[in-house]
Length: 223
Ligand code: ADP
Ligand code: ADP
Figure 1: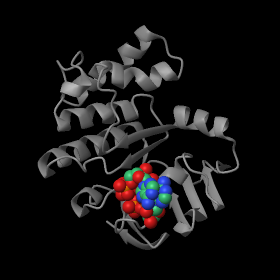
Figure 2 (figure 1 turned 120 degrees about the horizontal axis):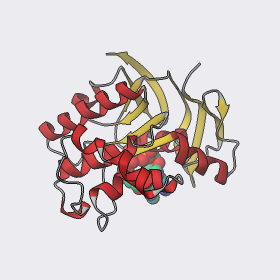
Figure 3 (figure 1 turned 135 degrees about the horizontal axis):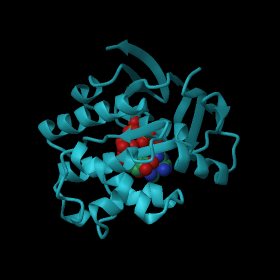
Figure 4 (figure 1 turned 60 degrees about the vertical axis):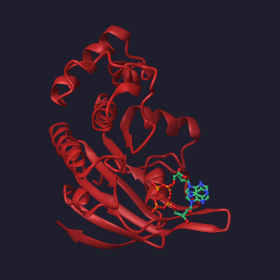
C-alpha cells in the first residue's frame, strides 16, 4: 500500500490553476523529491498532500484512507498525529528556547511537559546541537535553526515528513549537512518524506525525483 497519494488532483486559486490533474504515489519509508520551476505547483501539491489545502477535484489518500473528504478538524488531528513539517522560513517560535520548539508538537499532542522535554533532549545530541537546548531560537544560526526545525518535524515520529525548501535559506555546505541528517533520521524511523526543492543537489538525496510542470507531475527520474 502507498503511504501517501495524490490522484488527479486539481486546485485553482481564483482563476489561477495551480494543480491540474497532479498524481503522485509515495511508498512507506520512501524519500521523494518534488522539483520543477517556480510557480509550477510544488508547494500547492505539498499542501494538498499534507491536508492543509483541500483540492477542488481528485483524491488524497494516507495509508489508503481518503484525506480530502475529511472535515477541517479531522485533517487537523491527522496533521498533528501523523505528519511532521519542515519549512524554509519562520518555522520556529523565536521567543521560545530550542528545546521548547522541539517539544512543541508533543505538547500540542497532549504529552506532559516532563515527558515532552525528555523526548526532545536526545535530538540535540543526535543533530550536533548539544549545549544549545536553552538558547532562544531567535539567537541560533541558520543551520542550527534548521536542525532544530528538523528535530521538531521528527520528534513526534510522524508517518510522513513534509519538507518545503528545507535548505533554501542555507549555504550549500550547511544545506548538505541538514539533508544528511534529514535522510539519516528519516531512514532510522522509517519516515516517508516528501521534499520540495529546486536544488538538484538537494533532490539527489531522495530515492526518487519527480518534476512538477504546469500543475502536473509529469516526469519521473529514478536516482
Ligand atoms: P511552486 O511551489 O512550484 O513555486 P506554488 O504551488 O506556490 O508553486 O504556486 C502555483 C501557482 O499557484 C502559482 O501560479 C502561484 O502564484 C499560485 N498560488 C499559489 N498559492 C496561491 C495563493 N495562496 N493565492 C493565489 N495564488 C496562489
Ligand atoms: P514557494 O515557491 O515555496 O511556493 P512562494 O514564495 O511561491 O514560495 O509562496 C509563498 C507563499 O505565498 C505560499 O504559502 C503560497 O501559497 C503563497 N502564494 C504564492 N503565490 C501567491 C499569489 N499569487 N497570491 C497569493 N499568495 C501566493
